[in-house]
Length: 346
Image 1: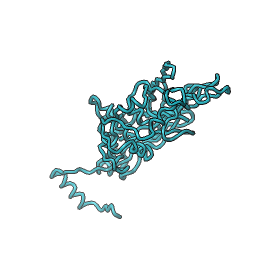
Image 2 (image 1 turned 30 degrees about the vertical axis):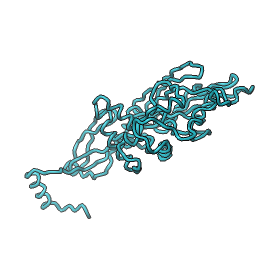
Image 3 (image 1 turned 90 degrees about the horizontal axis):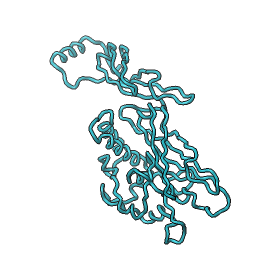
Image 4 (image 1 turned 90 degrees about the vertical axis):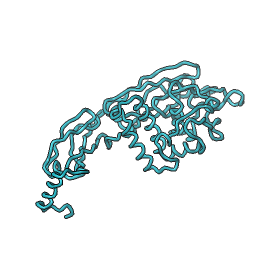
């Protein structure tokens, strides 16, 4: 089954000759890591940059675009299979350098080009977007059949067997769309512009309902490749990818966020503010709370869908001590040290 990756799906007239001169971003340079970086180093670099450029944290112009670039780079380099294919495109390129495909890539990209004597020369067209979207999509391989090394465009367009009399339903077309945690919480939409070989275009507005989780699939009936001999078209299958959020840890519909408290707040109890995806609320820290302890806030995770219940938000206590002390603070801690019989190691 043909597969296109990227969000939104974008199609632009890309022939191998044009691709020879297309420039793309260096994902390693985007994350600021070496090509030999380990998966842990790539993850640490992403988290650092995601915190720096996240739209909720950084309001500067261009921060959101940089956040998307960082997320795109992480999506490729964090997947060993995608990273391997990315590296196979050449070891001597740098950001901004022209793209030189590996041997045989042109044949995988275009089949049946006029002059080859083996086809009609149909091409798939991408409207909008930039080359990095298409470049990343090349690594996505295919699902449910087809080569993992690239797209089979003739198969996607239904050109194979076009001369046969038997009707055949169009194939499904798959694509990945990436959404943020906020979009998963509130819902969002994506515009997809598809262009067919006859030059016609159609724009689809795809709604992503609130509570959509990572890995779920949105099916758009009849928007896949056209059928043969009057048979119906296939469907468009959009596989949702949830971008990693530096503030929350996601487990299904449940969310966990660290809550920093002072030693005396943990010992005596306190009321502290906790940020949720729906605004700020106050949480009561019970006396004697321990570092790592989780406080459940029911229903403040990701929304439910269908019969699924909303998830919960867990505020995880993290005790933080002052890095520096005033003379009076030191005096009080020394006094506490003398008075207390508490031994944290027993």
